[in-house]
Structures are given as C-alpha cells and as structure tokens.
Image: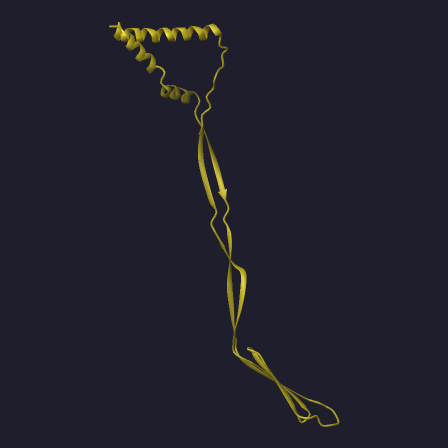
Length: 165
C-alpha cells in the first residue's frame, strides 16, 4: 500500500510539469516577435587648426613731383614693422615713397574649422511576446474548500503511510 501511495503521488507531480504546459500553449498561441530598432546619430566633433601663408618679399617705388613756386627743404622719414619698412623722402621738390615688404610667414588660428563625424549606430533587438489566453471561471467557495480538504487528506495519508511502522 505504501508503494501505491508513493506511485500516485509521483504520477500526480509529473502531470503538473510547466514545460509540457508551455509546449502545449505555444502550439495553440505562437509567440509574436517584435523588432525594436534603436538609432543613435553620430556626433560632429570640431577641432581647431592653424593655417599658414607664405608671402614673398616685394618693393614698391612711387615718385611724385610737388608743384610749388619755392623750394621745399630735403627731409626723410622711415617706419619699420616686423613685416615691412616704409620710407618717405622729399628731394628737389619730388616726393619719393618706397615700401619694402619682407619675406614673411603668416599664421591664422581657426577655431572649430575641422569637422569630424563619428558613425551612426543602429541596434536591432528582437523581443518575443507570448499571449496566453486565459479563461476566468467563477470559483465557488465549496469547490475551493473541497480541493483544500482533499489535498490535506492526501498529505495526511502519505505521512501516515510513510511514518507508520
């Protein structure tokens, strides 16, 4: 008798396998797969740069006669910078201008002049949803009580047969 009770208990527990129930429900209600796409736009990165330009040296001469009835005294003046030299002279009622440009290398620093792009990324994920139809039944109090009493009775029987000497 003890072996029969244990056999019935083992058969009843195997019958409640969730794997079998899930397999049966997936045949009735196949899963619905959705595709989620996540798009991440790329970034634009701005970098500073320095632009250089070489300017070769050059000389400009200009001479103009000053028309006045009297003689102008001879004078001269010079102005110098790191890039050029300018001379102005008055000789024999003639104005002479000389501009000498030195060889130079000019630098310009440009802020945010170079753009670099990081690539766009797209991530696709699949998600499976299982829709299991459930039927709700009105549960009567006497049915719940009956199954509760029946379960307690079976547990008591198993314990009685197991611990009986």
